[in-house]
Length: 93
Image 1 (cartoon, rainbow, N blue to C red):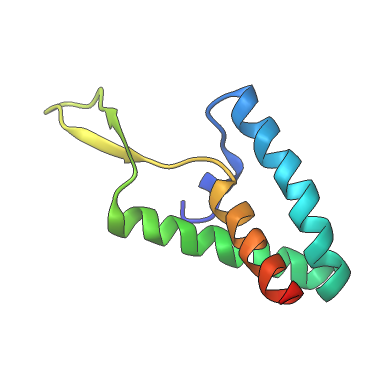
Image 2 (cartoon, helix red, strand yellow; image 1 turned 90 degrees about the vertical axis):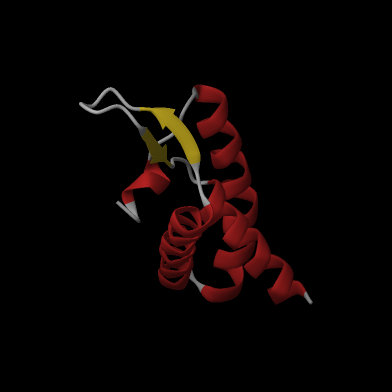
């Protein structure tokens, strides 16, 4: 679940904006480090973003399970894409 949530999106606007910025920052990082390392950086940033969501809180979703309660949900490539942005800026510095 720490990795798969990076491939789930909440809406078409959400996935469209993530793919737009993935295209921009992914190209910059790929030119500098190559395709294999781009994928490695993307997946690592995705897992790291998920761990941060678990530690610091995510989006509260009303649970339909017995006993009620709140479930934390996370979805989207925003974490990995932001990680690519940070790497792209660090490579340009």
